[in-house]
Amino acid sequence: LKDNKLGRATFFPLTVIKERYVDYESLNTLKSSNDFIGVLSDLVTYNKKYKNIIKKGVFEMSYSIAIDGPAGAGKSTIAKLIAKKKSYIYVDTGAMYRAMALFFIESGISADEQEKISAACKNVDVTISYENGEQIVWLNGRNVNGLIRTEEVGKMASASSANKDVREKLVELQRALAEKENVVMDGRDIGTVVLPKANVKVYLTASSRVRAVRRYEELKAKGEECDLEVIEKDIIERDYRDMHRDISPLKQADDAVLLDSSDMT
Ligand code: DC
Image 1 (tube, rainbow, N blue to C red):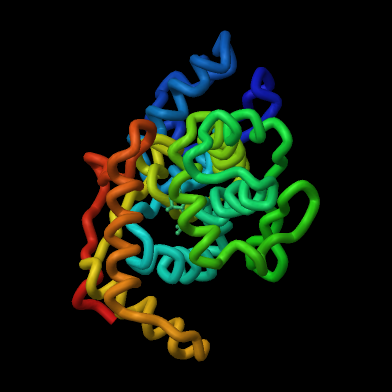
Image 2 (spheres, rainbow, N blue to C red):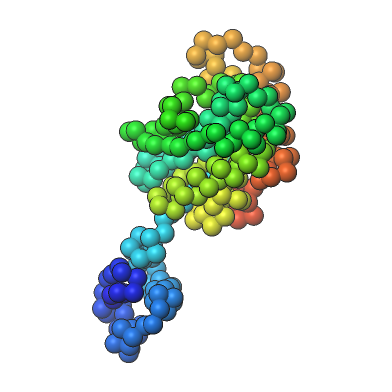
C-alpha cells in the first residue's frame, strides 16, 4: 500500500488489504492524506498487529509514557529502568525546571520576585542532550548537571515553576522532544498538560514519611548531616506548593494508573 501524497510508503501483507478491501485497487484513487489515514486507521482496528508499524512508519507518531508524582516517590528510578529496557529516551523535566532555577539564583533573583523571573526567561536557554543514555542539561551552553541537585535549587525550582513564562518555555521543549522520540517523561504535569495523549500514564506516589526516610538515607550514605524531621517538613511544603499552584498543579490525570510505592522496595 503506497501513498505518494504523503511521500511515504507503508507495507501491509496484500492478504490483509485484500481481506479488508475487496476492491483494493480503488485505494490507489485516494484523494487526500486524510483519506489515506482513514484507511490506515481502519486497518489498525482490523489488525492490531500492524499498529506499531503504522505508528513508526506512517504517522511517525512516537510512543510516550508519562510518570507524574511528588518529589522522592521513585519516578526517575522507574523511568530510567523503563527507558533502558525499551531503548526510549528518558526526559527528566524536573532537571529542566532546576536549570532555570539555577539561572534565577545566579542572577540574584529571589523566589518571590515573579516579575523578575518572567523578565529573565528571555535570557535563558535550556536544552538537553544525551551521553550514554544519561540526560545532560545545558543552561545557556553550560552543562549544569553537577549543580542542580541541591536543596536550594530544588526549592527555587518549586517556586519558579509556578511562573507561567517558565512553564511555557519548558513545556514547548518537552513536547518537541516527545514528538520526535519515544519517551519516558517524568514530572508533575506530564499526563495532565504536557502529553495529555500519552500512551501510558502513571501517577507514582508514596507517603511523605517514606519519601523523607529515603532521602535521609541517601544523604547519610553521602556522609551529609541531616535531620529526618526537617527533611519531611520540606517535602510536605514542596508537595503543597506543587499541588496548589494556579498553573499545571501536580495532580493525577483522570486516566493515569495510581501506584503507591510506600510499601515497595
Ligand atoms: O522532580 P524535581 O524534584 O527535580 O522537580 C523540581 C521542581 O520542579 C518541583 O518541585 C516542581 C517543578 N516541576 C514542575 O513544576 N513540573 C514538572 N514537570 C517537573 C518539575
